[in-house]
Length: 66
Image 1: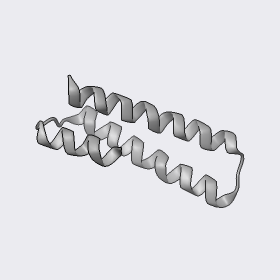
Image 2 (image 1 turned 90 degrees about the vertical axis):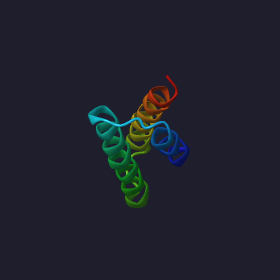
Image 3 (image 1 turned 180 degrees about the vertical axis):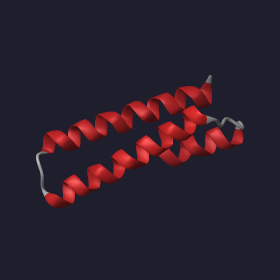
Image 4 (image 1 turned 120 degrees about the vertical axis):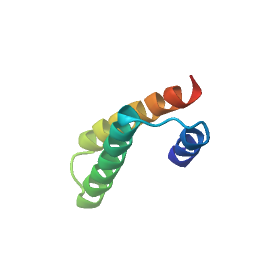
C-alpha cells in the first residue's frame, strides 16, 4: 500500500516538507516495528508502532487524493 501511495504522490507531483516528514516517520516506525517483532518485546509497542504507521499512511493518502 505504501508503494501505491508514493507512486500516486509522484505522479501527481505532490511534494514538500510535510510529505517528507510523514515518509520518514512512516519508515522509522516500520523499522521499529520490525525490531520489536524480532526482539520479541511487548506486543503493545508493536501495536502502537502500527497505529503511527497507519496514521501516516492515511494522511499521505489524503494529501495524494485531495
